[in-house]
Length: 109
Image (cartoon, rainbow, N blue to C red; front, side, top):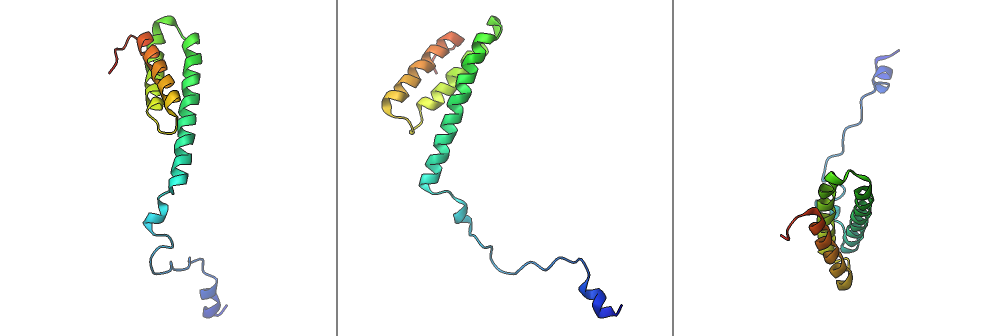
């Protein structure tokens, strides 16, 4: 094989192109609509997790229920402060958080 042919068959990766990246850093920031959609999805996931904790509360040893009740109350407090819910829903979530705090034996913060 001539020396020219060997040079063509090497497994050397091509050099990276010089210059700025294809997308500037500000392009990585989500749009307002996308951010709202992500927040709505996160709120939905937190609500689903909270419902799962409520189910677990009924199945766990009664002496351990205060731990779950505290976590449920915190989740509900977080949800009650989210702008993605209307005022009446946030008020209901705040009332539920207060009930679960009492059940956990925790005073209001």
